[in-house]
Length: 612
Image 1 (cartoon, one colour):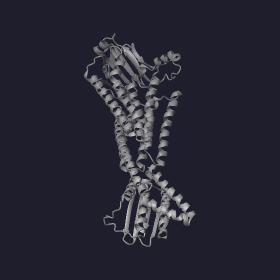
Image 2 (cartoon, rainbow, N blue to C red):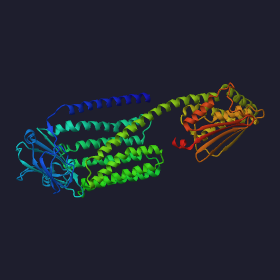
Image 3 (cartoon, rainbow, N blue to C red):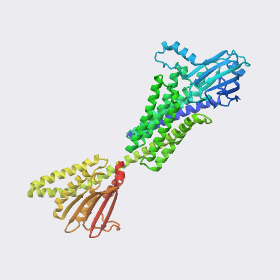
Image 4 (tube, rainbow, N blue to C red):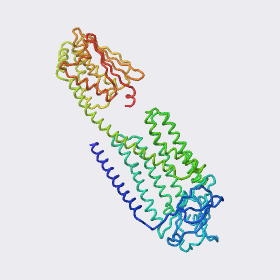
């Protein structure tokens, strides 16, 4: 039933993904192949020159992004007729900067300044009792400016100031301009941002549904898949916020709240990354260190938010410190994984899959000091890393699903094997011998007959109970069942069968009824075939790498190189070998010599024992 349910869910997920991808393809095709002359996104809306931090004036190159870092940048120039008259409206979306657009005579056309922010804040404070009292922080602002009353020959001055003294910013990271007729920002959001938002909503769907539920279908909830589910969710939210951040002020009045929402998703994503790293660690020492690292970064996040809310230190001013903290935390996690006692090749591949994220975090930190060309390195590295992780985990889930099917098939075969073993142990001949021995004892020694009857009953019950047991059992349980079997055989053979035990280790597990076929062979085909009987000895010992169970007899023995064609069924032995190998990784080694006896060694590796 679970297999059918799992198949239906996988089919439903595939259908949903296919429909969403098809819808996305249609949307992108409509967006890029249908001409829509309803708004324009100039990299800079003035034709003229600009100056960075009081330096020399440089020409503004059309459609070339301005990537210089600055504290204050000034543009001088004229708007084209198309922008000033044809469209008539400009919307400036700004992040963490003040700006002023004015004519050459000083007349202000539009601005977002400290004074305006304070005035707007004080004017609306009564309407927004929960608004943050941070008028000194620009936040994220969206402002509309009318330009249809400007002449195309009017020279304009556009000044942008980044108020944080400890860091610089590039123009393209803080200012975004849209020219349009009306409702331009909403149209731009619909055509530019919404497709990406829908795409990363699909990533959130993966995080909330696919990995945790797929793990549940496999029969258990694994912390690794839950952690990656949360990681996918917060990656989707982070990328959605990257698209939404320039539009938030359209719906959220307070610019500082818009900025804080953007920062929250970024920090939450890094916390999810650290937790996912921790979920891939097994040993106690590395997990403790990972907990300390994750807790330290989370403590930094809480601290910067408390300082922000307490009007002590601006949240955006802490970005450089938090970027360094993120890079150090991820690097520590990678080092911990590299020293983790795991498969070296898999650990190396896992670390390499996260290298793009770490490298781009480091590059973005260095960018604050040496001003590298280009922007948004982190998003590229993040995309590469997450795609690799998603593909890897999907293959991992697929492999686990196939392993589960194989395991269920193996359990079915083991069940049939145990039925075969049980039937072989309670076959009529064996029952006849046991009951005959008990019947004789009822006259000669009633007390012993009573004990034999109880032991035989417990033995039969153990055989029946084994049908419900699928996992390996402690060796002590198997040894107890063997002693009942040997007690019954002792009633039959009497003094011709001697039993010896040398049990030095019991702290391991074996499949139920897997040792008994070896003991049965020693009794029936070893000691039982010898005229004056003999001894069967069961011993165990522990070494550094494995546990060992030895069953030996001094019976007739046989030639191990001679192909057996004795008319007997050896299904019980073959089943025992297979079950020991499949469930415990154990090997059965049989040595024998004609006239000297037989020795069967069961070698159970400790690694397999620990993994189970």
